[in-house]
Image (cartoon, rainbow, N blue to C red; front, side, top):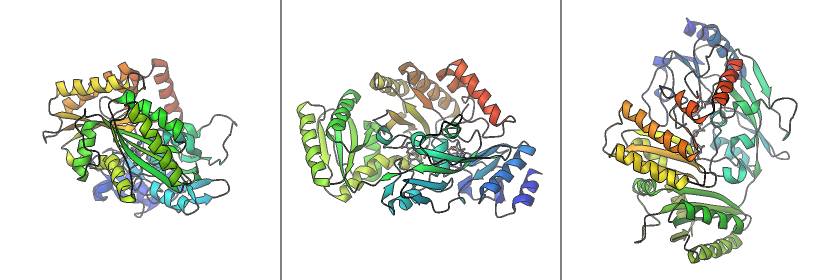
Length: 460
Ligand SMILES: Cc1cc2nc3c(=O)[nH]c(=O)nc-3n(C[C@H](O)[C@H](O)[C@H](O)COP(=O)(O)OP(=O)(O)OC[C@H]3O[C@@H](n4cnc5c(N)ncnc54)[C@H](O)[C@@H]3O)c2cc1C
């Protein structure tokens, strides 16, 4: 009945029965088991999104908004009794306002399409991540992506000026404000940032752009531990004004990345197998940046805060350094199963928390390995727990793994996002947040979505 109503309102160009839809809409980056929903909708306008939501609400059918399906915790995975609304046809060329340094985009525009449009005008969007060719602005907003420059330029939350979203009853919320300050009431757009599609469907945004830096220098550095890594970051931040990237890879991740890519630009040279940092500075002229970086590295060697390092000499070498950091795209193919966690840890105690988790998981499940990597500047890390024995991790073990990770992160005073849905969905936020915070979140969700049709079972 829902399918008939959707088809008669929106037509077959927008509505495909789930069983007939392209398989790519039924699974995601992590290659989770494909699930056929009632229908996959691919609207081409905000009006069509509104029509679709009105029908879904009338039939009380769950709705899963979908972007590029690169989210690592399965928030866009279809529900068998629900409808997927994928924004991939809402991808008109971004409108760049050079004077205001802003971009007006539809939610289905990919990050790389936005980057190209901005670059053509001498501008750039500062939030960047390895999934750039697939992830969409709507998905990036809904997951509040931090990206690699967040410690300098902020996450999505700091770079979204305005939003257009459709609420579950079809009401279009137009908050496409291009100004930096707007205190006319609550800043509603902020609620949609990081909401994982639980409050409505984001259909457009106004984003802040910055001038492009024409020159960059890139290096790979080896440090003993996280404490030394933080000291290195401090020195580089004070000596390299254009420092924009500081990524960290733990040994198991680094070795996986080298094996996956087939090269190792910074082999372990007899000393302890420490952490590897990818750093990059951006600026107007390359030569002074190289000189400043070289001087900073000499100081860091003298202080024994780095044990090895290589400054890229060619664009090919720069690509290789980056390819290691972005090798995590190969994790789902390389291992029979992976449990993914987005972990934020405090600087103080972060090292001990990570070593503790590696030890605890290794002891509880000997064939498991922890692939840790992420953004050093704000300690927003990714953990892939993989089974090196080649067999999938069983459902019960996944729950135990989540429990161990959650306890470790909680003890360290951090926070995390785990696989969306299933039995742990409510349990994780309950343990991380205070009861009052959790209750207020629930009440707020009901204000937007009293019937609970938006991405049920996700977030909390
Ligand atoms: C190779 C790779 C690198 C990554 N690097 C980083 C990184 O550096 N930093 C970081 O923070 N994250 C990173 N991620 C994860 C990141 O969260 C996602 O890549 C991205 O934000 C999700 O965008 P998407 O369009 O693929 O959204 P999807 O995966 O399709 O959806 C993600 C969530 O948003 C919701 N959603 C999607 N579109 C909309 C919409 N229009 N309206 C409302 N809700 C919507 C979905 O329901 C789901 O809950 C990486 C992922 C990959 C695969």
